[in-house]
Length: 288
Image (tube, rainbow, N blue to C red; front, side, top):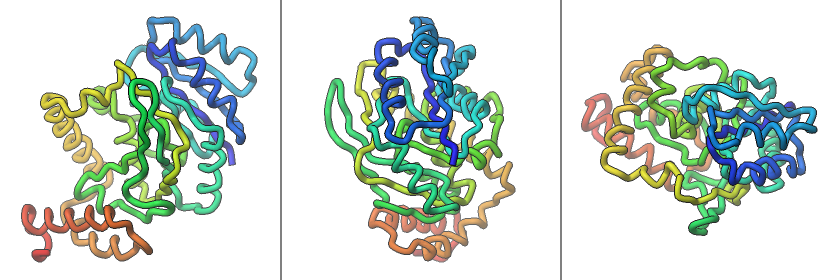
């Protein structure tokens, strides 16, 4: 199994050396290492080239500034790995991140997404763990199409199956514009759209850096919440059109739920919420 490590980078010269070192320090070294510089103006591109000058399996790709999703998609298109491990240029991987992800993908040929808990550091320190279970999570195609559930993992914890992601690329330019930040949402939704399974590793395998420029700091601002609501609906309209899905897919919610061998309490809640939404607002199911 060939693994590609993919760093998306924009104006993070201050943190980039540590991020690159966290990739080079993996117990399971990547077979390919790509840094996509998204039009940095602070010397990040030049630093990346210098850091990776003597790493024969690494290369740096530069593009005009297009945002996080654009940079990730560029890296996916440039990659040749079977699985792709995403890393933001201000975060760090623990040394066992790729090793654990590879084990999960080898164990389940249907796996489309691995993600993990993470430790926060920098301006504040705490720990986050996946809410929807520890270990294998079954297919969530119907749930995601009906209720837009986001399976939580920050970008730097995500490892995806390359073949499945490439089926949807290239994205229309308007999607890249809508999602200049929030690539983790798109990647987790796409993993569900492929009808693959997911693996949630509860223990942290990455370190998420909290600092003044974190996009997540504005996530709860009213204007941004309103913007995200619109862009989410636009994206799902696109998905439903591309995959020829209509609202009757909601009738498969209960069938999909029954396919989960040991669903977590939070996953049960998401299915119940989706059933209630469909029955009361869309009139597609009998009242739950």
